[in-house]
Image (cartoon, rainbow, N blue to C red; front, side, top):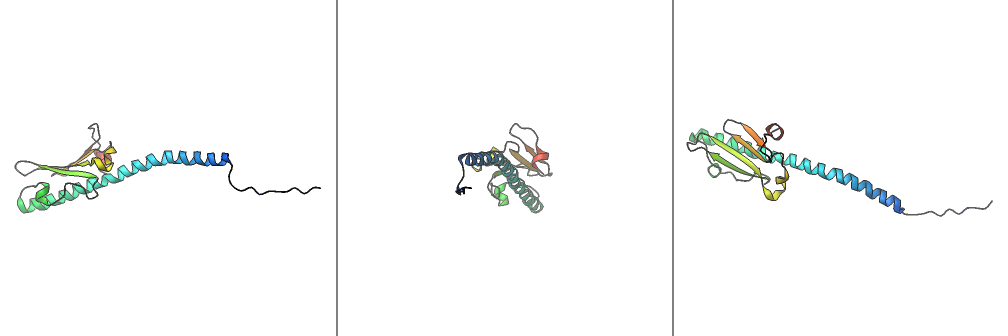
Length: 143
């Protein structure tokens, strides 16, 4: 009986490498869009937090001055805490009403969020959000 020499092969075959590459590519093709959508949803909290903080400042200002204020009078910035949203306040001429609005800042990538393009909050705590086409998305965006 002749002894067979077994030569240990090291490394991977081309077929194994291509298979691994295909698996990684498929996983990346699925994971990257899901991760991007998740980031857009999570960053919406920056808008809602900014508007709620603005509402608290408005309530304090109204308690002292019997009228609502603009952002400068409140001493707040016109950008959300993390910078994903621009914030503005439109108050009425008599100072007894306001609407605060948060819109995605274009340079942050959050403007890719077409589902929740604009958030609003008024003196009566009415919360509204609209998508890129102007449809009401309040239930989705203010959660």
